[in-house]
Length: 258
Image (cartoon, one colour):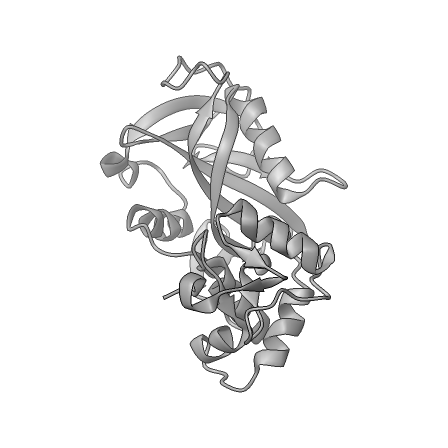
């Protein structure tokens, strides 16, 4: 199974699009897509994202937002899980905030395309669906697509199993806010499943994508067994986002999402 990243870089109402024309044996030949590619061995998805953008555009991403996790099944390629991002904070240096000239790319031609013209490009059919969600500024979502040749035969928008529903809900918690395990259990239609929500978040396979640190227990306490370093690590992550944590506890009346 392949893991990959794809980013739509935004600037003044434009997306940076790549017209894939240069590679002979390119599954995307002739199509317009964002910038990104496959993860390398031992590389995290965020590391892949930053590397691929730098290699294809010369830009350094200073910040980015996860927007979706999309699974592709097809009869002509290996199963792929693609992590979709947008970014509007980039440049070749800290002193370069504008839209610099685009470099040559060995995979095709880069072009700034007005957002209202993107849907008129030669896109994959499935890409039209998730790009439309980006244009609507939809909250984080899961999606599954089934392809036969170039034809999209089926797609499902939204998480399809309990764990992905947990991750989808966690990814929608805004920076600077928290939810509880019980909140998420209710949100995904499984009231009383707070413990199962906690187990799913402890096993979060999407580090750096799904912000499981934004979920605390019913009393507002960080998790002793937080999967990425324990309660102190969770508290540090929350504080970095502006959430006040005292004695390992968040004041829910102030920080609770919604």
